Amino acid sequence: MKEQNDNDKRIAPRLPIQTKVEFIVDADIINAESVNISTTGIRFDTQEPIPILMRLEKDGVLYENRAHLVWAQSKADSGMTYGFQFVPKNTEKAAQILF
Image (tube, rainbow, N blue to C red; front, side):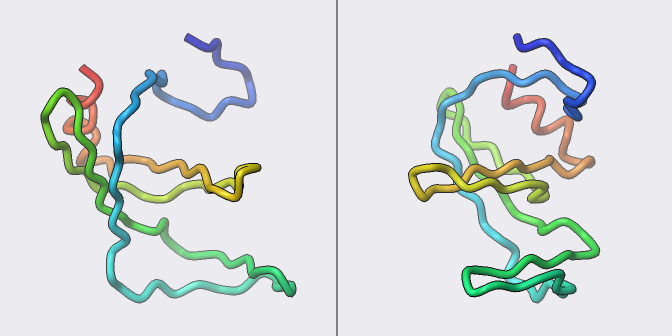
């Protein structure tokens, strides 16, 4: 396991998992405040994280959890990498996925 350094904000250890994940963005209007804009995109802030419903399968069991989008990063291959945080009331349920 990777050692935690002073800049690492993680509060729980990470374990590798390889499975298909589906996520459904709540079909709701989310208000935001623009920060800046360019010819290639826009940055905006929200008052609350963007909520999603996440589904993944492990060992033949389908798990469904609520989560919040907390970060996103572009990849070199034009894809994206996302970080989601499980909603606190679902944390115990999410822990079942790992064990």
